[in-house]
Image (tube, rainbow, N blue to C red; front, side, top):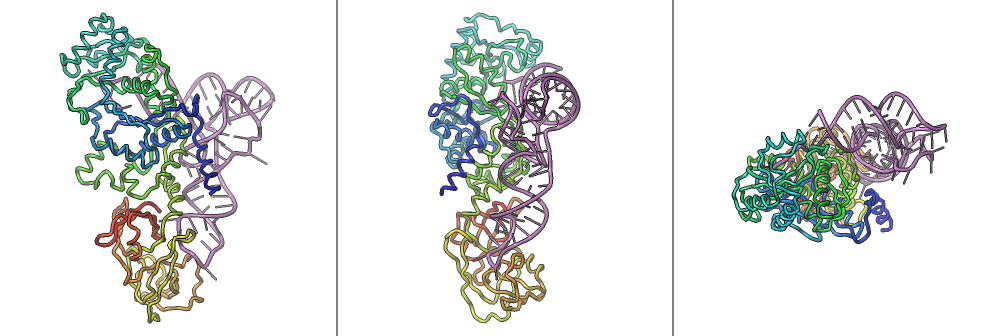
Length: 486
RNA sequence: GCUCCGGUGGUGUAGCCCGGCCAAUCAUUCCGGCCUUUCGAGCCGGCGACCCGGGUUCAAAUCCCGGCCGGAGCACCA
């Protein structure tokens, strides 16, 4: 136990202290757009933000930045999926905020900015404005009076304009050295039904505006965001300055790429699911948290995996092998051991006349009790072993030593004649105890027989000896398991 | 084109801010050995890195300049 704590302690050190963080006063948020299910990438946001909040006894907020019902249309089911996965990962949000339900609030801040002369309604076309931006020139709408702007803004809200005809821009500096900062858009018109608030609004805030206001309202002290959003701070600071607010401490991190999953976009996956290529969002081949959970990964493994990356700005390109290693450390201690024989071949052992109960531990080192296998004449072994040992001696683990003949027969030997040494000990399943077992792997299905004792382990992550860790999913017509990793 | 960021072994990471204790940390992968209850597990051991070039300094992975390579933003997307 003491060692456990010490290990955990060391792990914590992976997260460097946050600048200007005071115990009990830190407020962090994870702000996804629920336009798809949480993925491996989401996990990093949840874990690192949640971990920091915990580290400083602070607050962890889950905020849905769902303010684009068209281009990044939220998926109604996904809201709850995020909440579930936060909890599964061990970071239950202290507060949950839905941006789309607080749009009126954003309007009021927008009005104030307009009244302050810090925001204006712009009716330039995209290309038109782009030109002004590139040239560092102000567009004709920029210097109109506050009164005119108030009127135009109300016009936007009332539907005087259609999509694309008018936007509300924040005044920054048209000569700012970074073109990305110049008079950015705070609100635009989108005539689309929103999954959560329906057709209540036609004017929606952009991420930069919504996020800027929310971070202040919620009292966020520290923001962790991808470096692709590094311009946000520069843009949002203008608003903070106009209102006299203090900007949170920002830490950027690089993007993360997992070798095994190329660039699978949410929309692409969605299409493939509809086409039937994937069985659903929890298809084991997908990088969704649902899939990982189904495969039997432990939340702590995800946690250690992501904490090991720290919060640097360099991009991370990593293999799932690293996650497997983290998971294995946990699974190895918890998983019961069973025999599963793939590509089964039946052998008959000459010399076995009666059935003997073979007692095997459910775990080699942890106290988990035992399982009983019938030591009988007919057993299955995997074809791989059959080929490897045909004509040679092998030991059926816990049962007996045999010489395997090409014919499919086997001859019982005295134990002394076969050294019980790693390398010649194989696993087996008694024919009378064999249950069909299907394993769903990322590469396809693997079929064979498992010992019937495994029927008791539905829902658990087990280790099929000499095969892999798997999560046993169901037991209808035989067993169905999902492959976790070697 | 403009702006910003990064570059430590196969992979990830510590160290860089406050130069020496760094012939560089930890993990993983890979390789080898051990294990008469498994294994791709465990245990033990091993290989393996500061992008390049200048400069500052008694001393540079650490500071400065230049180059090269990589990433990001310049959306009425998040």
